[in-house]
Image 1 (tube, helix red, strand yellow):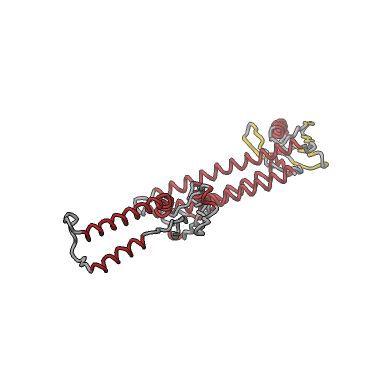
Image 2: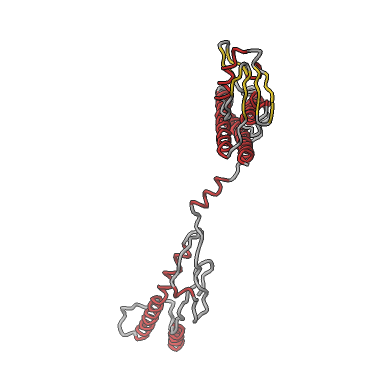
Length: 321
């Protein structure tokens, strides 16, 4: 016998039961007895009743004997019938792996797959649906356009830091961002001196306009982190351009990562300020609206952060060659 959706098993044929039933029918027909009324097993002298009871006992004994043969098969098939549809990989005894040679029953299923933690976690890494809020609808709560502009300003500053501080080929403009500290305050180097390129290996800074700031300018160039060692000649600052080494390239790559991490900190500050501003309206708008705005802000942050990572990857490849 084969049960649909469960393991197959063999049922031994119930031999002898049909012959006993035939014997019982024959006795009934010969005696012409009316079995509409139940005979009392306690009535003495009634041979017909005793014969019937004997046959019934034989029948019951035969049935119970056959049920004993079915017990191993039922014990294996009932769990399969009652189990949940979740499937788990299990091994079966070798006896059932080759099928039954007597009745042709199919071999038992070798495995069933169970939903594991790994399968449940598959959905966690999948991208979620994006939020798109009309800025005009929430302008009374927060100006999302201004938040976006602040985030874009952060990434623009990062690009500017890259271009000013992480140039392999030094040019006169590479020194423009250097800040010189004087007794009158802090000033960009290009406002105090005239920067020119004498040769590919030498930059000159003419400090004739502010000769008192010559020493301060030399110090600022040396401490700029660009691996430069300026030389002072009167009001003229000579800046030899060192040969670009592998170590210098690696240092520039590390500096690029530092700039990126600093930019991400500024980005998080923008996000925090925007979320706090939205939460101030929690008394006038629903909590779901606040959460939706927070999700929109986080989505904007994720987009800018992903752009920063791309900028860093590109700049690192450029620096390391």
